[in-house]
Amino acid sequence: YPAFDKVTQLKTEKAENLVADDADLIFVSLPHGASADLVAKLLDLGFKGKIIDLGSDFRLRSAAAYEMYYKSIHPQQQL
Image 1 (cartoon, helix red, strand yellow):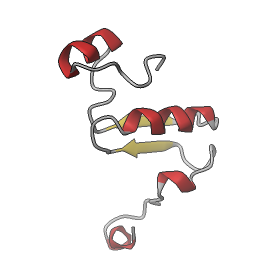
Image 2: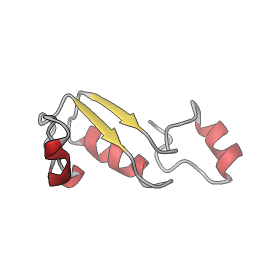
Image 3: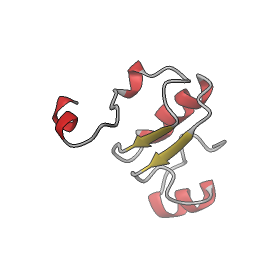
Image 4: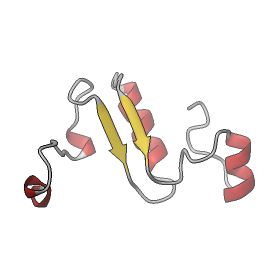
């Protein structure tokens, strides 16, 4: 993401290139249904930092609420 080099000193990286200890904080901003699997993968890889999902996958506090509003089962209910 070279366009951000002139805007911030923060390091940006594609999620698939991350290793568990590369970051303290990860912002996820993906279309509905895409963040859940990525977040699960990051946690499986041992990521211990904070993850902030700007999308809709973790907007609601429970899998039941997710199912009620989105009419589908949350892809990562255990999270």
